[in-house]
Length: 270
Length: 256
Image (cartoon, rainbow over all chains, first blue to last red; front, side):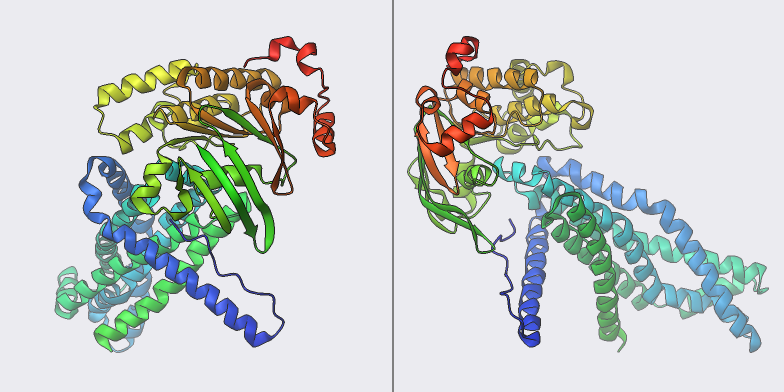
């Protein structure tokens, strides 16, 4: 499933040689993760098959519905915090009515997918990394291979679908709640009329902002699955290894989401 | 049936198998014994290519498994049933679902037929009562029996056992030995058993292979093994207080 012939850094004392060898090992890891996730993507047409249907539905439920409570709280408060911070500054110029537009644009373009990505990486991604890591060290993955059950089809593909389908939907939900949070602050703290707030949201939001935000969310879902499944399926070293895999899943996902988010923003708005 | 030809395996430059040669005949039960780190489990994993050999050939019914990919590798693996050291049951499935899994995934049998075969095999290993329990809610011995049921439900030609009695109390260990022996008799499969437990090896095996530093030191039937003159074999037997007269002292152990 994952090539066992991993690149082994030869023992060398020269600093630049070590960097070079570490770089090669890193490239191999990235390549493995990309191939693993791409294989899962190619298997997606089989998601409606009798063997995969149940697991796909469970992953959609696990990623989407189970994440709603934490997403709801974070989204509402992000919207409120952002409305307070921008509202205070806008009030100095008598432009507090513009707060709705500011919240909507920031959430749709950047903060919606970004915050959702971070929350899902820390909750669902960590859970996938830990579960697959435990399965790897307890030889459950080996058992699947011996039973001629492809772990990519059985485990990785349903999780990929769960994340790629649910991330845009959760991002949409985050955006709506954040705008609602902004409205609460706008009305109660800044004295903005609800109709004026909504009119501003409508005025400044563009379809492009929504679509690029949702596309970003889908890409982030792909990234979280790629990192989590690769970390989980390459776990070694028992309970300590599972802990490391879980931590690496969250840290690497955060970093890759950040960098990819920047690249996509540059592509669409740069 | 299974043949190792000069198989070598290294982990990070450290040799574990040093040119191993081993032949397992069709229908026989062979136990691999030896100290920790001798390469027993590594040998077993090579038989189903869970590990890649550094060099050599591993022939399964004349086909070198190291040359196989994709569907061909799956076809060879379908000949095997494998009982893992920790049973390796999927934790979110019940015992029944675990045993049914290979049939649901790899066959087109109707659900009623799958249910019937799973119930039959669970009955055989004495696990009918625990069929609806999750693996986390049953004991280690029961997990091993469930793992054994999953390994045999597809009616494989070869059964591989990785430490089937490790971590179990002596009474449960002997129950598992009895089960392995009965399954062997009923199904007529070829079996390879990795074990530290000499009583288990002497009880269930047609031949015992002693592994030492990545090679096969001695292969012989249990009676000859007990009387081996090899120093490493003698030390291994002495360490478990097994005397040459084991079967005279404990005639009830003789299952084969």
